[in-house]
Image (cartoon, rainbow, N blue to C red; front, side):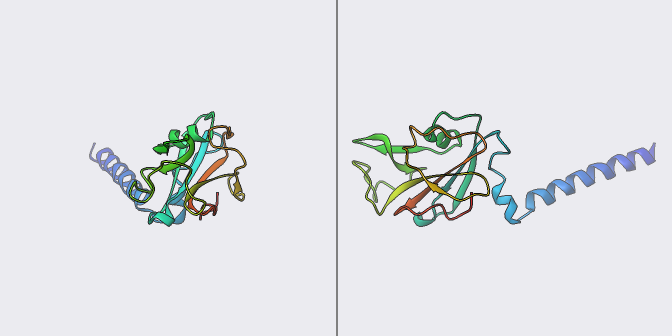
Amino acid sequence: MARSLRLALSLVLAAVLSVGVAVADPSPRAAYAAGCVGTSGVTVVVDFASLGGGVTRACALGDPASGLTALTGAGFTITGTKRWGLAFVCRINGLPTAATEPCLNTPSASAYWSYWHATPGGTWSYSSAGASSYNPAPGTVEGWAFGSGAAPSVAP
């Protein structure tokens, strides 16, 4: 009985230690953990770097009907402009702030959310369609970057 108890405790300890190592793993691959696996959904990358933040990667599970659906399905909040609604994404997760951009009309050419598409491991392509009319395929990557039209600063 004591031998089986020791074995059980050893297995529990090994499991706890392996979970601790997995959670504490600071390697670069940990940054990509929130992306979709295979064709389980659309990976969304939002680059907040020019606004003082980092890059966030999340998964919109399933087959989102539009780029906006993918963006919100991945957990991001969006605000459009007063004049054009969500035809122009003015804020993602509250950025830029209302003090910087009032979101009344079309954002300026030097300070807007540019919209990009890619395949995992590929290169970014600037979207020729608006996010409300583009239908991303499961397994692809959608990118958003704030500034003057530069692609997200990380690979898809």
